[in-house]
Length: 535
Image (tube, rainbow, N blue to C red; front, side):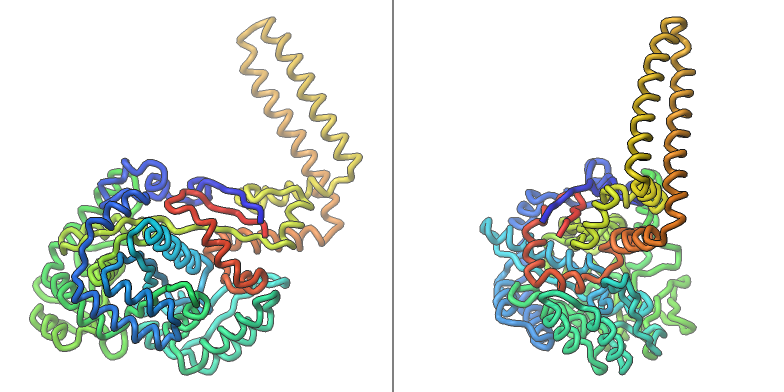
């Protein structure tokens, strides 16, 4: 397995905030509690003393959840360690169809890798994966992009429940059978049977998006001790009730702090990931089966078209805390209050909004964990590797976009004799220009600038001529179009990294279940690199 590394900051569309977080943490240190290093995690781990009574309660809730997901003895053992005070390494994701984008798997692997590293160094640690079953935007999770030899197919799961219900409450329905059949029919490789069985047994009509996702991950990570957490749990909501109550009673103070933090970020020329307005609160309530935001209106609140006083909402919270849920800026605070999290494994968008959420940690007196970037991979199968080599392309060429890829492919299609003539001509042109530069600058040193301009224009036109020759030849070949679509579809789908789009399972089937361990061993904790693996 060949590996090429690209600096994460060199990936197109990387935000300035994420670049600073990776390369110049001092410039963003005021927005976070700890630097993203293994040494920082070890320091925090040594200083965390979890409430063991709370730990035992949470552990028993998670034990019941994981047994429903079909967990094995490795998870039972991890829960025993968690109940006894092992530090928690946490990550999480929306419960996307068939596990969603590949980075879901990379997050879980990074959490497991860090827990293993700490445990090996003498600090007992477990990995916990938070299933975002309270999210209500079903349109974000009811599909996946499924790569195969025929290209990348979008597999949709039509739902009649896209009306504000939480993901953990929405049954998959009969349509899931056809979706599973479409996906499994395209599986190839040594683990195809295992993946087919996992999907068929997990994604059945009676399951929800959340429970099916949990059952699938329990199968994929069998034997690895990954603890799954279903956020919709009424029991967990009961334990988190004090945080919900504090957030409700202090909503104005929290909101003013968030508005101030947004201004601080903008003054530092960083973007604000989550928009906060004057009437915002960090809470949602489920009313009549719909998850709705709680908005502040003077001294009262509105939820949908209904009005509530503070006492109305606190009474409702006392009676039914499971009807309440947190927005993206409060959710991590509740998570870390319940789990005493030492490190959270995050993607770029999460790292951005955690710069805002940090103020909620402080005001609600919850320790903020170390935020560690997740591992980042592009996986290139043997067929795609052959295409890259056929056209002498590097992955860095693909990142430059379709036009650059096309130009290089067209150049490679030129007949060898014509290619050699272009190469020879370019060398001759450069030699002639160098000789001319020497004579011109000897005559008048100020002519150097004119020579720079002339040389740049001449070489540019020569390059364009070569591209046009290749394009003329390409017009006679539909193969080039197909190869271009295939390369971009496999490596840079929809103008973004593969991990943000493609489902991981077809690659896992093709390469075998050992791919999970191979990737785990390659993870560089706290690393700021995107790894490109030629399989």
